[in-house]
Structure formats: C-alpha cells, structure tokens
Length: 121
Image 1 (cartoon, rainbow, N blue to C red):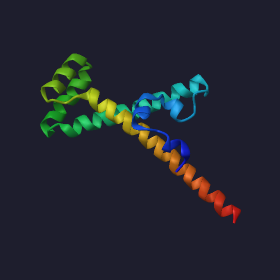
Image 2 (image 1 turned 30 degrees about the vertical axis):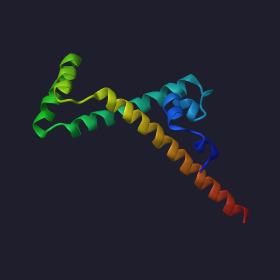
Image 3 (image 1 turned 90 degrees about the horizontal axis):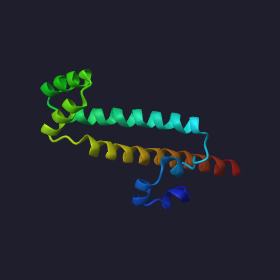
Image 4 (image 1 turned 45 degrees about the horizontal axis):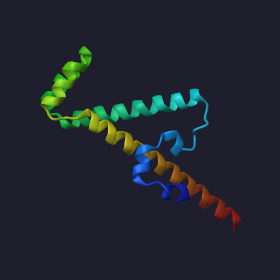
C-alpha cells in the first residue's frame, strides 16, 4: 500500500479537501470544477438510491411525484415523517466516495509497483 494512504487517519479523511487527498490542489480550476460536478452527481444518485431503499413500495411513487413537483419543503416533510435523514445519508456517501477513490488509487499504484518489479527481474 502506498505510504501516503497509511498516513491518512479518519479525521483527516473527513477534514481534508478531496483535491488535497488526490494531490490535485494545483490542477486547473476548470478540471477541478468538472471533477466536483461528477462527484456531486454520483453522491446525489447514491443518496436518492438510499432514500428509495428506505421507503416501502407504495411510498416510492409518492416520493417520485414529490420530486417531480420540485417542492423542497414537501420533500423534506415527507422524509422527516419517515425518519429519513438525507443530510446524514449525504455525509456518509461523500465519505464513502472519498474512501473508494483512495482505494482505487492505492490499487492502481500497487499494480503499477508490481509491474515495475516484474520488469526489473
């Protein structure tokens, strides 16, 4: 495993900016903006999936209709009456996504290291 991933404790994972974790602090702003948009879309899709998984079948249609109405207050009330906390879901999914990205990078670096060692033989 890469040394940098051993140095990441849970608190810093939560506190650090994703670009800092990925060593992309100096990336062009348009690239960072696109990465953030893609990440936010992924996280949003995961949150919606978790909400749908938390609902009974008959509630899913009602929830989808509320989303179509685009009334945030009604959606919030609907979720609150069912004890569904989208803020918590969002925080959890954002953290899970950070961890997944770091794991993918670590696996890629491990594979690259293994290839380099094989070529050295």
